[in-house]
Image (cartoon, rainbow, N blue to C red; front, side):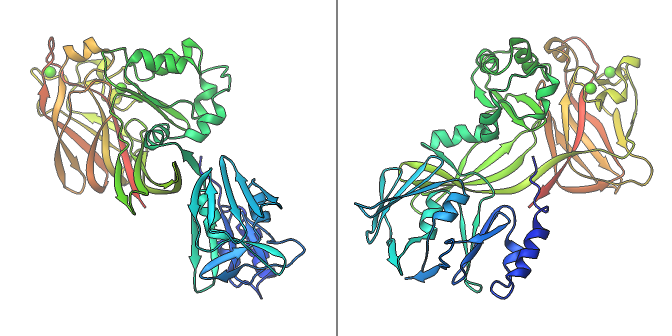
Length: 458
Ligand SMILES: [Ca+2]
Ligand SMILES: [Ca+2]
């Protein structure tokens, strides 16, 4: 799902040279996701393509009372929108996606989706051309605008599609759907088989019960696939916990956490709200910050910033050592085999305190690791989970000599995150059992899954 940003840079660079006399630094910023304009320059770059702002007329953007004005038709049309002119009223109507902006020549009142808004510099006719305040229109369409005063350059970020939402609840709902736009595009796809849909981002949502979650999935998949989706991590229907289904590209998963969407910041008379999105791959926290602006009665996502990205990491030619096993069906490799139905089970008499598993790569290879994801206990079924011991506290050791102790929750089928709080470069990760939750039947301490993750901060 990563955009290919580099591909058009060379072409843009060449165009940049062609117009070098006018626009010294156009090329560098004229990338695929941006629109670049400059005061007194009749040309602009739209998503890698250079074109005239006002074809055949040579009109350039100008500044009036600190606001940039220009003929805006080409720009709006290049964005996929439409402009109309109502002669009787001297009215300009801008339409783009679900946005409608009405402006009148010489008037300081406008409407944005039928809500009246004041504008400090009105549209005006200069030298026979209709000049429109750029920032006002673009920002109300939901795109952020940057102004570079030194180069008198305007950069519009069109890296994403602005999303308009009715209210805070809709914002929350949208963010819970993590990949809302893609989801909308593909939800009607008829998946012929399970594997085929694995590369798509199909379904997200939060549900109060297993049943409602399953009903939801059944809208998009055949019943058999919906059940398979629910069982992806061996989850069984269990009580009334909140079921959250979310998706990220090639993986789906179900977790039972509460919603993490929080409105964490309020400023400018509550017009801007910053929200953190958690995009949870087995509990991964790929954190984005969404800036939501309230425009009239609408909430518009105007900015998305990536704060951190988490990915799973593995030792090169990874191997496992353990202090003991219960038998050949409970070997060390079952802790790291990606199968929640298999487990490493220690083989010592008693609860296995002091038993350990060590995971390492080949010889000198260092892994940069930010934490461990662990599936506690024997997760094959709820009964087996309860019957056997789970780890409660572990010691984690690294090849640099450092170590830490971590509590592990007694929680079935979660990839629990044990974060180190920093990146550790290590040749091995050794996990020693310090305390256990006792099983109802056996003194065998089990771990069904261990993965490592690396967090990149931006
Ligand atoms: Ca396993
Ligand atoms: Ca034991």
